Image 1 (cartoon, each protein chain N blue to C red):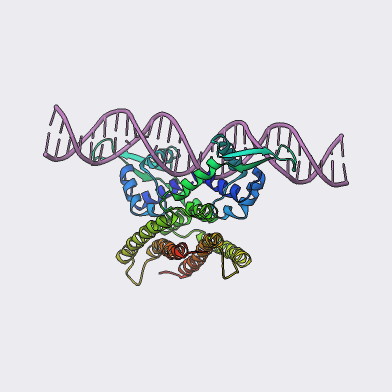
Image 2 (spheres, rainbow over the protein chains, first blue to last red):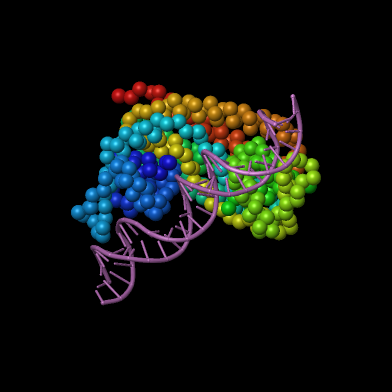
Length: 178
Length: 178
DNA sequence: ACAACCATGTAAGTAGTTACATGATTTA
DNA sequence: TAAATCATGTAACTACTTACATGGTTGT
């Protein structure tokens, strides 16, 4: 039950249509909560049924474009959800399973895959660092900006972790053993 | 498609029954890939249908207990899967969404929840450190042990990350803003 | 005999993914 | 007018979760 609240947040920040929402997701909230346009359309329908958002046919724009706006009930629901307590999700990564498998059935191509992932993490880290420089360079930030910065720094720390871990893993996998 | 391979790995390490498997999961692979006993029973059935494992009625043990053993085809499948390349999962945490929501709809009880989570991460880290001391204290480890250690160290780094991040977040949330 | 627990399972629902369908507008 | 692309949606499937059902064994 997180996607509807992610959408409410994005729509309060800026009302827009389903496809615009999907695109904005790809380059902001989507870094931390990915969603496809199919999921987004389905969820927008549910939000409207629940009376949390309203849709207006957009005068500007093509097709049967609709613009969604959050209603007071939606704001109230978002506030309720935000204050809820939720346990942290445990680490859940197929790679850990594959390493355990490799440990008992002998060498496979995991090493090559870790190298590939290492490159991806470095790329992602570079992107986050660029976003940080662009959006949070000021020394005095508003509370809103500071919270957004916190989210981005979790992403940065996450990528740094996996870069560090991958390098360590490669060192182990390269060491010839007796 | 990861749980079947997690089960194959666990069953190669040591053949056992569904419930035993569920219990072993809770205190090893489950730290990184949680599964309920319902998931495990269903998946064991599928593995048997696929001819990857066989089940034998256990002479020792109560009830209609069955013991599962991995067949050669299962080993082959596990090897194939382990060498597959898979992209890292992006960070996916409701807390990031709740912080973004808090940034625009104003203060809620997120701070209290981060404090609670901080305590949970510290507890989990202590557990992992204890496991590390117990199982990987030796300086000279076999390749198998070294790989298992890598998995555990990912868990340790993960908890350390969230402890560090939580402390940072609390500092931000405590600072009174103009 | 009955409670406690061991062991396996079914059923229903939610969330997320993948593939495809449909119509409307722009542009070449 | 045909192709590209914008915009919204359906359908089918898989993974996971939650709640419940059933039968067997052990201990009192």
